[in-house]
Image (tube, rainbow, N blue to C red; front, side, top):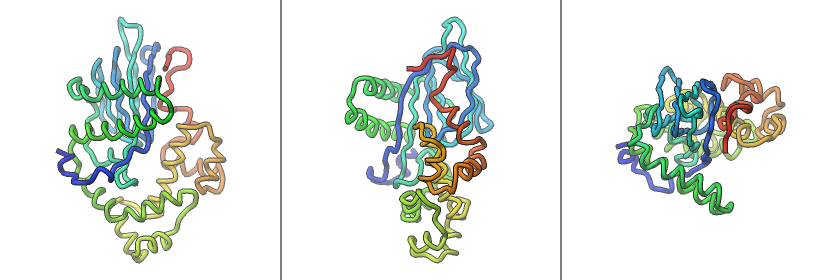
Length: 287
């Protein structure tokens, strides 16, 4: 349904990030609290998940999966009984529309995917895991790009577009050049006058459009993009916080930490410590 509504060419979509993996947790009842800058699909192989996010709660049983959008705080409990092990497979990915808008923000994503809904998604995750183990760098990159878009197509077939998503889509179409400029200049703060010139609009008109479509001022949106970039780098690298701050145009590590905690509720180092791939160091094994 959603896919039919979005009459867009294939070039409008790009896979900005994708990683797949497995988790083996031997600590029954272990609770993991995190927020990630990516969409997550995590399928239970054995044991159970209990996930709480956005005022919703679901028990996820073998063959089922939980599905969460980017920047969504969640609390995940790992449970098992006779198997003595909680095992899952996961994929984390980020697909952008027009190179600027996270597709997951447009869709009404269910928290739980049934076994039937996972029938086409599960083999794609397994193919990704095989490519990670056996492919060379080029093959892995091509596989990630292909499967990131394929997973997005699957979700668009399962989910409807929200009313808010339609508003975001309209705004993204109109403001693509401005948001693209924000991303190109994510190494420094950008002012309203500069952005307005890029859009060939008056500052007041640009401000009004961002308020209408995104609910915030243009400079606030630009700062949010820089903070999201910081979050991705914190979770995908071991770069020092001061280096990330410098390269994203923050005056100091303290400045980045203050802004980051205000946006995401935790300091950068705590955010890094909660990397989405981590399981208990003594009682869980990941491969």
